[in-house]
Length: 488
Ligand code: NAD
Image 1 (cartoon, protein in one colour):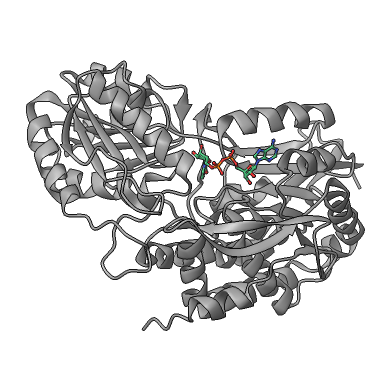
Image 2 (cartoon, rainbow, N blue to C red; image 1 turned 135 degrees about the horizontal axis):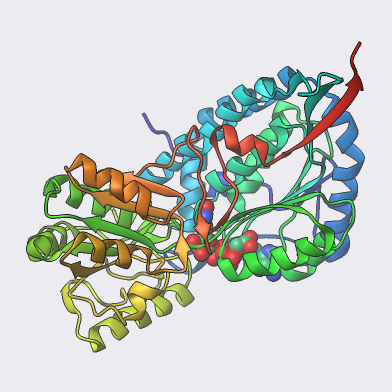
C-alpha cells in the first residue's frame, strides 16, 4: 500500500545543501530554483556551488580514498545493502520526489525506485565477488598474480531523466569497488540525489567517501574537477556533445571514462511478429518516462504489409492516454522537463508534418502552465524528417516502412547512435540474424522494456562506451594489476 507524505512535508525533509566531507554546507553562489514541470512553479531553492567548492569535494574524496579502499568488501557490501533497504522503506518518498521534480507519473516513479534501488543490492552482492587470478607464466620460470584495485576518486555526472537510477547505477559499483566519489546531479532534478546521499549518510558511509555538488555553473565546477590530477575516473550519462567534451578533457589526464550517451533506438516490426506483443512493446518502449529515455524507441520501422494496422492499433491506445500532473490518479503522460523540450519536440513534429507525415493522434503542445506535449503518433514519415534523424526525447512515435529484411537492417543501422534496439519477429532464425546485424549495445527481442541491474547496459558508436550494471559494471571502477615473482 502506498502512503505518500504531503508535498510540503517531503520538500521540508529533502536536503538543499552541498555534501562535502561529511558536512552539509551552503553553496557560495546564490541558491537556484528547482521547478515543478507540471505547473512551472518553484519547488525549493538549492545550493549553488563554486569551482572552489568542487575542488573542496575532490580534496575530501582524495583524503578519504586510502582508508575507504582498505575497508573490507563485506563492510562496503553491508553499507550498500543497508542503503538498499532504506531506499525501499522510503519508496513512497522517493517516488513522489521524482514525480515532483521530473514529472513522470507516480506509477512510473515507483518503477524507478524498484529499478534504481536494485543497483545498490546488486553491487552490495558484487562487492565481495571481486577476484583476481594466480598462475604460472607459460615458460615455467615465474608466477603471476593478477589483482584488482580501486581506480581512485571518481566524478559521477548524471542526467535529469532518471534521477534515482542514474545515480545508483554509478554510486553502487564505485563504492563497492572501494572508490570515493563526487556526484554531480543534473540541475533540473537534483533533489532525488540529495535525498539518496542523505540515506548514505544515515547508514554510516564515512565522511569524504560520497560528496555531492549542485551548481548552475556546470562547466566551472566540472572544469575544476576534470583538470585536477587527483581525479582518476569520470563516469558520465547524458548527451553525446557534452560526453565528447568530457572525453577531450579526460584525454588530457588519461582518465578512465565510462560514457552513457544519447540514443536513437530502432523498433523493427516484421510481418511475422505477434502484433499484440509489438503494440504493447511499442507503447512501453516509446512512452515510458514520457519518451524521455535514452532507450526510448525513436523510429518505428514497420514492414509495409502490416504498417497501417500497426499504426491504427498504436494510435487507438495512445489516443486514450491521460495527460496531466504525475501525481493525479490515472495520468499516463506527464509534462516534459522544461519548456525548451516542448518547443524542440514541436519543431520535430511540425517538420515531419511539413514533409508529408500523417498525424494519427496528437501533434500539438499542451495547454496551460506546465510543459506538456500531446502523445503523438505519426504515420508514413519521410526518412528525411528530423524526427527520425534526431533523438526525440518526447512522446512522439514516428512510423516508417520497409519491404525487405536488408532494408530493415539498413534503416535500423542508419544512425550515428547505437544504444538500444528492438526487434519483433516470431521467426527464430531471423531473430538471430538481427542479433548479429543490428549495431547496438542492447536489443529487446519481442520485449519493450529490458533494463535490469543484472544486465550490462551501454551503447556502441556515438552512444558511448563502457557498461553499467551486471558483472561488467564493477570492472569500470577497478584497475587490473599484474605482479610477477620467480618460481619458488
Ligand atoms: P546533458 O548532457 O545536458 O546533461 C547531463 C549532465 O551533464 C547533467 O548533470 C548536466 O548538468 C551535466 N553537464 C552539462 N554540461 C556539462 C559540462 N560542460 N561539463 C560537465 N557536465 C555537464 O543531458 P541531459 O539533457 O541531462 O540528459 C539527456 C541526455 O542523456 C539524452 O541525450 C539521453 O539520451 C542521455 N541519456 C543517456 C543514458 C544512457 O545510459 N546512455 C541514460 C539517460 C540519458
